[in-house]
Image (tube, rainbow, N blue to C red; front, side):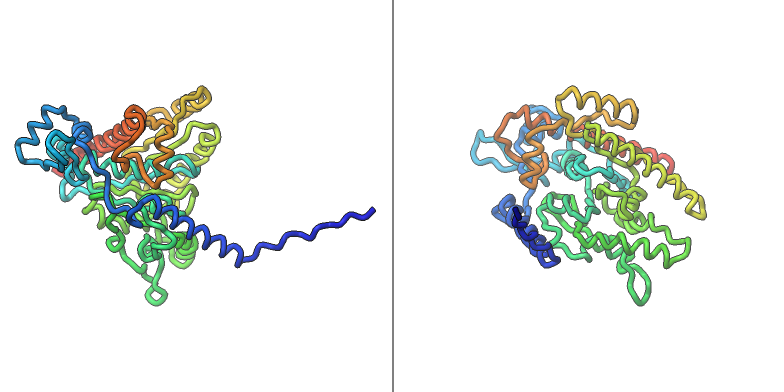
Length: 407
């Protein structure tokens, strides 16, 4: 008895893949536009009620009302007498500067670069970087530059921008890497051209696009074309130097790979933030991260003629998406025993609210009015507040020490 054999399905061609890519890009635009209605881009940061301003500033209602009556601080908007006052982010920052009174960076002091890195995806690098940047602006009145170095552009999407449809390569960091064919010099000598304003006051962005993949060919090519004096791992740091006079912080989001761009981000950093999710696969992956990371840092000493070494102001191992499960607590203990004092005192819990915010192209700090439980919102917001305060307090100590050394 003979059986009929069905013909194989048609082969997937390059045109088929192109069609899929176009459909995916179009769908992302539709989703993004529907989430940030009525505008196709994020235009405005959240509005803060007087209660939230009091919480951010660490003052009670009596102190708040006294300062309000002084007429020296913004009064916000009030729909009618007796209604809750509402403040813009810019107004909230003025309240922060008047009450929290964070240490000001002196003009001759440089801003600090924080790189958020891990070679594993899904460990909240982008979420951590975004909340850190927004929190430093909102809670400490800092001026922050955010750099998206991931060709996938996840951070850029969170800023309400479609990286593949709306960002050209000349708007990314690529011009400091790409060389002029005639002169052999970088298309741009530094990154002063790149920062763009965002919907969040005092927070600028250097976006990503898929064009950043080209850096992985350009940098090694330049290593072969140049002599041993070319420090490929210092390209980003050198290009950032002029911007460190303008910004208090630069926060860099990296791809979950050991790429040439990631290496540049690691060596550009003054401090590292390494998020980890408490599951055994993430723990195993992080072991590899530290192995390769340490080899890079020590290896560059022998690679460089002047024997330079790399050190960091701080390294923060941040336990993130911590669920209330016995298995996760076991891995949490492994992490703390392994990394000791490098593990930050703050843990970011796993919550439905955080996942919902991400699905809506928002961060925890983007939420103005949460319809759910105030306790649920506090549970995810408070740890990020503590992380921001911890990092800024430590940075202030470094700035103070630098000022004493210069005196």
